[in-house]
Length: 251
Image (cartoon, rainbow, N blue to C red; front, side, top):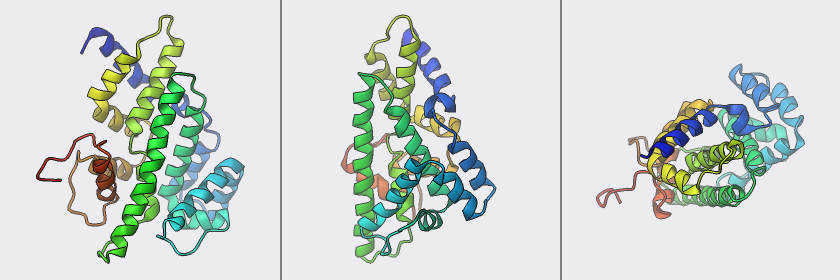
């Protein structure tokens, strides 16, 4: 690693650890997280989520995408129905990804185009992951995997690249002299695993999400037949985007 790459890596990690800079608008996310941790009454959660109509609409839409994939038979018609079915972990994951996407939309070129490409990939992976879960269930395999857990996990499938590129954009905006995109490309190619895991920890995302992410990317192994990460691993392997590619024996 060159001296410049080491300097940039250190500064990127510092930015990744700054949740306010990475996420931006957190007026809803902070009280929502506190309410979820304290296992607040559903009415409290409804009030918090409903205070941001865009977030409420997003959660309702997300909660119904699994139904559209054929996993869930009853469509949620109210935010209360959606929140009850989603559960604490999925509510926060969806909300986090919503505000992250909102923040990414503020990036200037060329970062905006690059990040939008990653986000489009993420959404496509999420669709494929839910479909793969549907295929498994239709094959009558004895599994018990929540469709929203698969979908939320899939939304973080290229989390490291998105966060690192965003941090680099913020770094370059504050620098007197622009740093070449080749530097961040090299760091993403060589440091993707460590940057991804550090981002999960620094931004306070749940341990299960981080663990299933590692399973999905073949960094960690499991014998759990109900692992959402194993469902996602199949999709990531087909798209050739695993951090740790499968060996010929595994595939």
